Length: 381
Image (cartoon, rainbow, N blue to C red; front, side):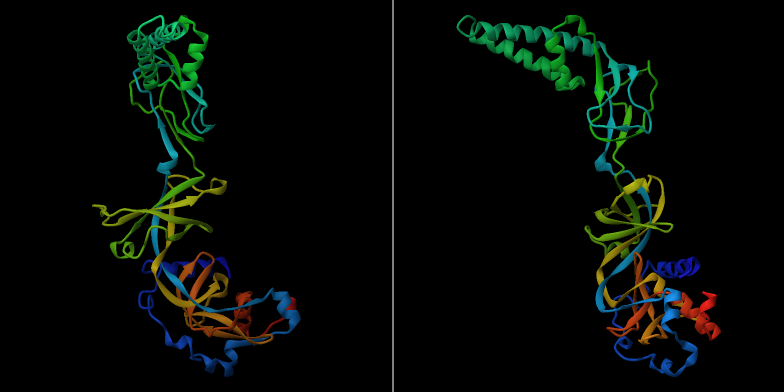
């Protein structure tokens, strides 16, 4: 199939949310009888080719079977960050930014330093911890036989509280251990590093070295873009037939990625009157980026009987209907009108065939061309 015909087919499938309205959810009786059998005697709807012609045209066939396929819902969507794989890094206390260790767009590993901060509050907390730690070590060395139980417990509690305060201000346990192992009071100067809480990519770093950052201000946003979300907007009727766990196809131009519905909102958007669903999509090769607009094709909980055939097997007939070519005998191909119900990635679900029929899966465009001109010259292909 040429590219233009593929676009026409996919555009037709997008009408009515991806399902032809008068067909969705209904059985079509003519699937089971030879409604198009009168084509057998019409030379303008068939072509007979020799084996060498078939090879030259690259014609391939496959046998179809009738099955139950989920209906689909088609909706516009926007690629957004996976909120469950995104972290905002903020200071817990007011602190001056003294050094940057990571930049926008940089790949970051969990535990990697992002920025160095300095704070008077942290300096006081670090000094208090050093004093409390020394007193606790002294009390523990003397033991309860030498000092009272009260003094022993007070030293232990003071050390625990001093430790908790430093952690609350933003130091990690490994950083605290390093400070205590050095035991150098001059190191209690209020300097500490913020570390990356996850693997990912820096997608924002809105600050300048030297400024004072207030507690809670976002210094870095880090996200793992190996999995993203698509925010798809559905009408209330379409949302009613989409369930969490449903599979979805995400298309960007000619590219297709598979995903799964993981969340469904239950309140309408006031401006668009639509319901939002989140589709989780693996992002190999960094094909998707937040902000991109895509088309989401989501499986419905309702089903329709039909035949799955490759997109390239379905063409427009001269009168504008959809058709495939059925191999009725070796080298003999006849046009059969079909009803297109919906798409499934590189396949479409059609009605109008008989179970077990062999259709042309590759080379249908060549057969259509030969029927149109009434001849086939192997040397022209």
